[in-house]
Length: 266
Image 1: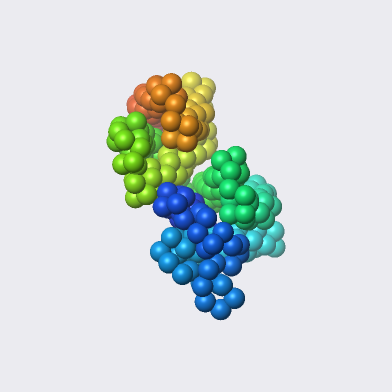
Image 2 (image 1 turned 60 degrees about the horizontal axis):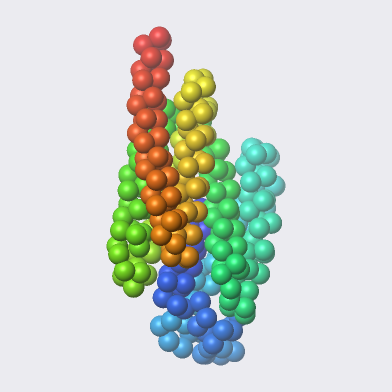
């Protein structure tokens, strides 16, 4: 549940940025621009910013609650507890960065705010996989790689490079691309972690690890290309994304072959 709320917070943050609502609420924080004590939104742009903050508040409570539960419950894996506690430590930092995007809006602060949110998402995704690890099989590795292979073309197709004019990069398209981004991250985390658990092939585990590196590069370059409008970055982004797609496809084939050999040996 916490993972879902964290993902929702990220996407709502993207919506606030894409609609130009980040400096709505008359640039007040944590208040807005209407209602008692200026706590409520006065217009649609303010609503986007206000609703992002509202959901982020619940995400913060969920993160803190998860960390407290992980520390107190005796049957929780120590690795899971460490991950969610790390997420809890990052939460106040993320809150401060969120405030700074309102009080002194700069691209560097905005980037830190985004990547901190992504890091929290990654920490909780890894923790979730660890919790479910005993029930995850090689089939889930193939499914995760397939999800990654599907996500890559969509990630590129939803970018301004394919859409064309940057003015056509509407808020709904931006939200869709970032939803694909989160799906891509989750896919490589599941594939890498579960693959290492089930397969002993060095070539396969190295390939699975490579998907993580290439996925992060794809996401980083795609975001930089949008933020800087640099044609050179566009070409590098597409090249890395194409390589990632090839690695996903090869990974699916290797996982299926390795799994079939293992079942045949039994």
